[in-house]
Image (cartoon, one colour):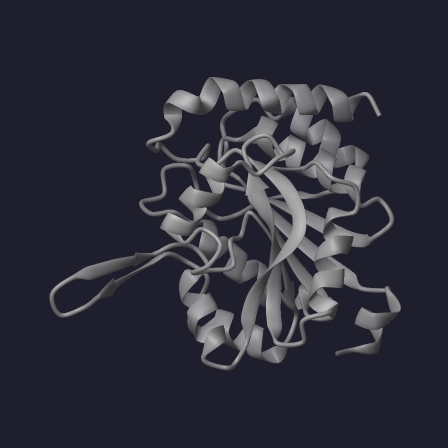
Length: 254
């Protein structure tokens, strides 16, 4: 474990991908810097040629010195480009000297003070962990039994390091796995069946072959789930938007 990691002078390089989700991305940005204002975090917003109104997002990005850069993809790209964009982020030579990589989903909101600091502390106490993530909640305040049951059924936490809010040690091994295997979704074709591996899942499996695991930290974030692409939860979108706008108003007033 490096001296910088233990000394509390960690350099964190963070990324979030905007996919016609500008109000959600604005909330992710505002909540990150509101909850961990004292950490050395450099955030980049990668934009998939979004066509929605970015006025408020750009105002927030300017306030916190966050660049918005073209990802090279559009909202019409054939497959989900998320993992490939994050792969390029990890392999960017400009990020080679950071202590940690921080991956944020566009629809995450940090609702507890010191969330990222808690992730760092969790990694410091688990030397066999390559990365860590918080528990997830619809409202960012409580993880209901129903949510936990669904998470266990789907393997939401157990099968992979979920990239909604994931902190990963920057090691040569991690970068090599990202270079050779990537962070994208994958379909594994068994002889008589197939298996879908979501973003970060194949990477997580490969890291396990090196004796490294991911751990769940004792902290909580609000995760809206599935706002970037059509999904089975679209009927819950109005409630999610209401919670998003409530948090935006709260953070914008600070």
